[in-house]
Length: 126
Image (cartoon, rainbow, N blue to C red):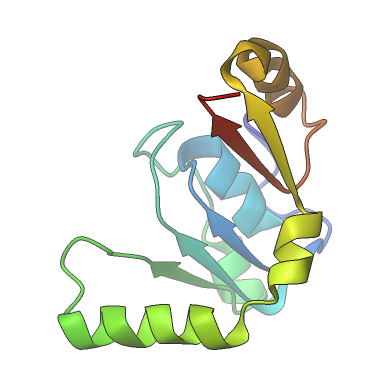
């Protein structure tokens, strides 16, 4: 996903949250299903967007930016309220693995290889 891809790929995602940007975001957009929505909230790979307009025109894909820095207090309160009300903590726990600081290099390698799914939490006290 982090390398240059095709301007339009097979429809894979109904929606996505991207914290990476650059080629990864471009590839996610290219693989988003008709009328899908992609939220962008980070620039880990870079601030550029080397993408085509094809997903927007041919599939009616929406790219939404997430701005947590300047969001009004009311919007923040509503977001936290929705998380408290709607987030299934059992599903979150099933998708989460805890690890100690010593395991980070190995897990980081596996993340970059696309072999990790879900959420990884590093507990520096383990």
